[in-house]
Structures are given as C-alpha cells and as structure tokens.
Length: 424
Image (cartoon, rainbow, N blue to C red):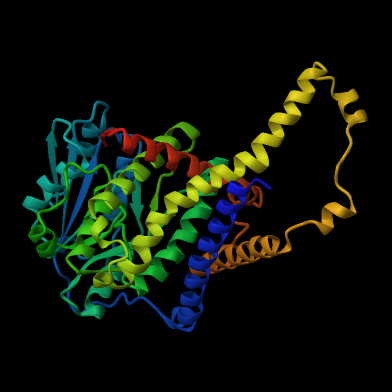
C-alpha cells in the first residue's frame, strides 16, 4: 500500500472512530432518559409568537406552507405571520395574497431581492412576539410543533435559552435522491438530540427554529453577508454563551431537492457557508471557554474537511484508479467484453487473505457497526420504520452518498479559498 495513502487511511479511521465512540457513549448515557422524555403540549400561558416566512420564487409550495400555519394548534390571537416576498419573479406574491385574504393575523412585505437574512431582519424589526419563528416557504410545520416548542421554553425556564430547533424530516419523498435524504435527516435528528444535551448545536434550521426575540435583537439580528444565516446566528449565540436546545419531536417537513443539480447547489451553499462560519468563529476551535461546543463540536466540524479530503483520496486509490486500469485494458482490446471475461485472471488467493491488514479491517467493521447502531436508533428516535420507503435507498446511502457529499464539500472548500460568493 502506498505509504501516504496508508497514513491518511489510519488517521481517518482513528478520527472517525474517536468521534463515533464519543457520540455512542453519549447515546447510551442518555438512552433511558430519551425513552422516558415526553414533550409537553400543555402550556402555562400562551406567549405572543411572530412567524416570519421569507419567500423567493416559491409559487409551488408557499400555499401549503401557509396552510400548515393555519392548522397550528395555538390561539390565533396569539400569532402574527409576516411574509416577506423577496423580489420573486414568479407568481409567489399572487399566491400569497389569495391565501391571506381576510386573515388579519397575516402581513405581507414586498421588496426587491435582498437575500433571506435581510428579509428576516426587516420582519424582525416589526415583530411583536416574545418569540419568533422562521419558516422557509418550502417547509410545512406539524400542528402541535409550536405548542411543543413553547412548552419546552417554559419547561427549561431559563432566560439564556435563545433558540429551540425542530426535528426536521423530508416531506413526501418520491425520487431515490429524496428518499436517501429522508434517511439522512432522520440520522441528523438523533445527532441533534445528542448534541443538544451537550449544548453543542451549531445550526438553527430555517424550517421553524424558534428564537427569543429580545436576545436575537440584542445580537443585531441576522448576518446579511452570510449565505447560511441559520448557521451563523447559531455560532454567534454560542459565542455569547447563550443556549440552543432541540425539541426532539417538534416535527417540521421540508422539501428536499429531487434531482442532482439542485441538490448540488443546495449543499454547495451549505458547505461554503459552513467553512465561512468556521473561519469567522475560528477563535472557538478547541477553546475550553466554550465547553463541549469548543472542545468537541468545533474540532469535529473542522476535522470534517480533512475527513472529506481523506475520503476522496482513499476512493481514488482503491476505487477509481483500479477502474481506470480496467478501462485501459478493455480499451486495448476494443472493449471486447467476451474475450476480456475469458482472459480475466484474478489475483485473489489464500495469500491475499493472509496478507490482509486485519487491524484495519477490524476498524472498518467497527465503524460500520456503530454507523448501523446510529441508523437503527435514528429511526426509532423519529418513530419511523427503516423500510418505510423501501430498502433500495439504503444501498446508495451507505455505499456512495457520503462520498458525493464529500466531493461537494471539497468543491466548496476550493471556492472558499478563491473568495467565491453566493446569494440566496
């Protein structure tokens, strides 16, 4: 084995194993509590809540989004909805006007395209609620979620809790790519629940995170120069040592990209925004002043880029280079598949087995077992069946999905190094 690749391989597996075992221990430590934990829906009082809905070219989904707000089990007189049409070029504004007609709790703001953060800040300046929620215009909130999240604020009874995040699922997945993302989101719900217990959440998802209005205003609102304002505000909240909690069964459903091109654009923006946030808040990396967030989460987020580089390098060495050699041999015989199959000789024998690196094989097997434990636990945590959308999406989820995400992450890292800018 190439020495450089061998070193990269061992470092990658050791780092992955370290963080995996750490989270696994947290999971086993919290498992009994998770089983007993139930989110309250009975409220001591009903604080006024502002719901901010930024929209840009969302004519296909905005009506369903607003209908989901209508169905919230929360007193209508205790809610205001501020919709911000951010210079949409389609029929988004017309759809909004038709839906909100005759509903005094709804307000529509329209301006030229300024970006999501600027739209939220304009609405935040007008918001009357003690709390405010952001709801992306392609997402749909469960009727009980607002009650659950407000009840969690009241249960915590802690003025330093600045944000409560939802449990986000993919809405009505149809394509294989959407079903793979459905699996991914369930795992992320569990990981968010675990990191919430460590006060280490680093993103407040756009679909229905709920903020304490006074705190976010004191921090200056959302960063209008950042392309992932939901990550940046979470980093800033952690920097000021406020708290972020997850409502583990406060469900909100988001529309996942159905095809590869929009998926690539979405993840490229996420990953580019992530590295910008890491660079912006680099002082928190491995800084014990910020507890587990600095010593664990920030280090993990930073090393994620190394693991992406390592994953691509290992894949090139073990998968793509052998495939290129096969392609070269087939090209030499004009792709005569029959003769190639007849003349093919395998180099695998008893000595190949005896010369295998069993220590490395053990690490790979251990990582796979831990990954499957999390995969199983994530479905149980989210009250979903693994086979809900069939078994087929599970194969690419384990076999190639994270390699795809790693490739996009590397592209984003390259764009960051070149000062690449993106808009919402």
